[in-house]
Length: 337
Image (cartoon, rainbow, N blue to C red; front, top):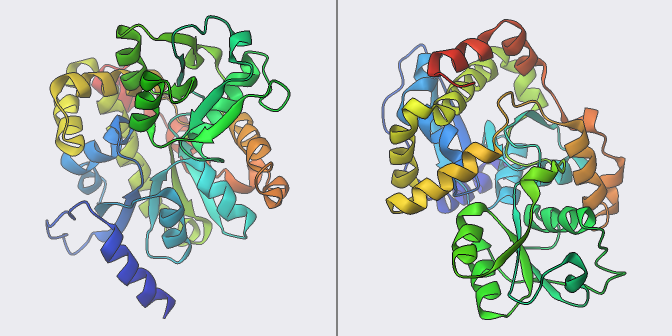
């Protein structure tokens, strides 16, 4: 019954069309799902559209799920094989006994800009103000807390009122209209506000604040049963990452971003800038990033405190690809430094 339930749920929640190309008989079909709609998903889209999964012997059906918690729940039930998602939901699932593992982390640090309305000039000016986030406990909330800590502020001590206002588009509008005083945004949103006279109080990407963000995830049981398939998926996504970071492949990357996000050329360019800034060239999951994420999550869910970085990081396949020279060779192929 559980399998039937998830099959029906997934059929309703997946909104991106499946790849209809028929798999070759020798290829194993797998489902790779993602829960975000931004330029940082480009390596996955590139791997699909450029035939990189097939190149490495896997037929991958890529699908979009509305929300990381739903994606993680479907993975735990076995209806999704590999997830391209943030680490927060993974750690929450691990606290509940799930065997999800982080194979790679494409972004291991906060990359947001802390944007404020006119009149706020210094960190001290944020005391007593209203700070908007997408959800309490989510990645944007974590970026906000780490950003405030970096500036020497504490929301409780400094009476900073953190409220749920909406996604990044809504947060940007809320700052612009004065509904909130500050928030953290990707560059694609913050640069637009800055052009209209709003201030970026801190570019947090420069502060190197560890956090667990975009990653590649699979169940430990699936990894153990299918190590060759997981390695093939990793190869395809690493080549997709190298392609997305390649200056000479930038026009094709922008086309793919525009295709999936359905945005104009300028918006695609802005998203591309965020992607290039945010991605780590060798996507090892950062234990410090996991530790920071656990520290913040446990304030909302005490069970998370029992999770350790070694409980959720599984980077043996990534190390193998690195030590055999695969990653360096792929980057050299695409001219990425």
